[in-house]
Image (cartoon, rainbow, N blue to C red; front, side):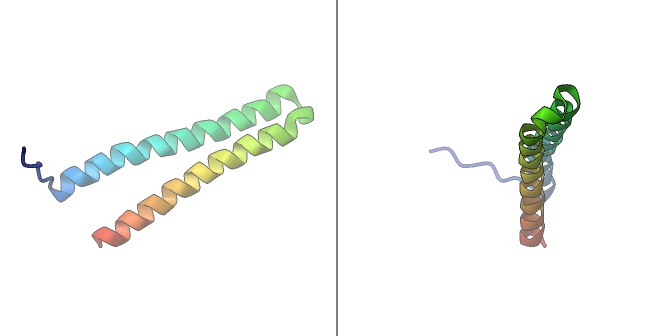
Length: 75
């Protein structure tokens, strides 16, 4: 069996940054899509737009929770 490669703390941090950056983009784009729905479809679609904005906020909160959890482990 091959021995697994050990990563330095800097390499682990760079990988974590790449992965968590995707969560940030996903949450921001989701919230922007909700704003697009709100402004393009009008107030008739405000419930759907609000649901999409809340979903984006949940993704961003998940992103924040992961960062805080990882920071506490490294600390």
